[in-house]
Image (tube, rainbow, N blue to C red; front, side):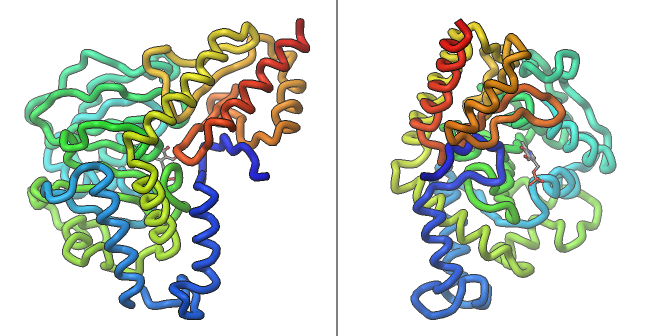
Length: 355
Ligand code: PLP
């Protein structure tokens, strides 16, 4: 039986997607060639790319609304740079909610004035700042919807006239949002979509073409849009697997369906963290992420025992990020509810054995 995989990535995928992906490696389209051997310009692969782009927009409710979907390379980290290259003329506003927002800020600083509207650094990024204001003359506002490392998640997004840019790497397709509020969304594939190697970028096309600088072709969103996300050889396997996962999600009932499951998983685990005296959550309750739950033991001497117990229960990847410590249970779309129940059972067993 497959392990209960609570790893923060890369990447957690449904079993049926893995099955189909492995078949395509050996024999794609019943043509006795591998998916990774055929030309990316061939009709079957162009269809894969078009389907992946179309499904991404469809699931987010952004079809025929002026948005384009791209599957680029360089990870979400490349978008930290590309966003600024393509959109930052004079001034940009950033919300600092942790490791990933900070990295985005660091890259954008090279392109113009940067206003950090608020930060939760004062308390180890254990909460999402609120009540900040965004300068009206900013070229865009950037935020990170889910802090994968600390386990916080933005539940609300600011009302602003400034274009809204969001790094949704670790919670895209996990919950329903008013996606039309956003002008640019990016996400590394490797949490809820597919293997590392491609990044989904969703752009409202009208926000492009406003910067004065020359943008190198590979970093220019418009170039990728004009070439239908095929300016250079795309990451064929990650794009194919992303397409399969998006189709899986659509067949299940799309984001509204998976959001319900995700809420159930998170509620089950957080209820146990709050009830069991041996565990403590690491972030402000109202800002808890439904994707990445972070917690610690209240008695550190139980660490070795607890670690042995969850490993024996077939659980994988529960250790916290190296910069934070403790535990992190990542509950991406493909993690079943019964896996969360398996973790809760171990937490309860630990409590019983400790009494
Ligand atoms: N942004 C967020 C929210 C992330 O969780 C990660 C990686 O985990 C990144 C950006 C960086 O992504 P990549 O490794 O694809 O550059």
